[in-house]
Length: 171
Image (cartoon, rainbow, N blue to C red; front, top):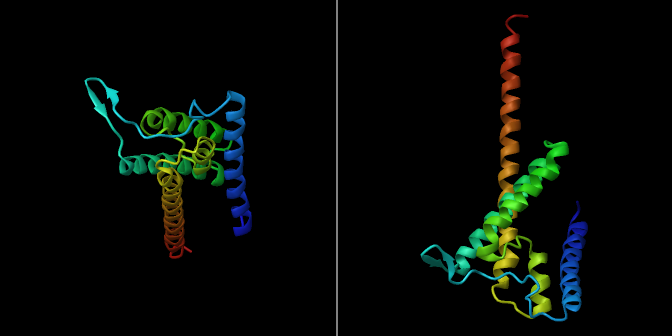
């Protein structure tokens, strides 16, 4: 994918998120429901205690959720390792991400998914968090997987050279 194609993809994602949220606002008759605008948990009841997510903790949670999702997507579809099981792996990752993060951050883990409802409701609280954390998590996942692929291919080449060296004296 070239730079121009990537920029077009990103812009179309943001436009789609905003148009979708505005359409939802029209269908529901306003933005009183929040339209799925992500918010950090405040006084979330956990048994006898309550939990409030700070922006720093929210950033880390969103980055980790995006990291898991991008890792699974790159490991299955891009690398082609899971073939017919890729949709199941991605779906299960989405499910677990939502179960873990919904109550804590709203779990959008996609800047376009977060920005659409923010625009439709004019509520931009913690927008920086929802626009940057998923990108950071995705970049970390891509760097880690690229490094692992290089490491494994380097080790595979080294093992191949050892195998050839072992065959040479016998010839």
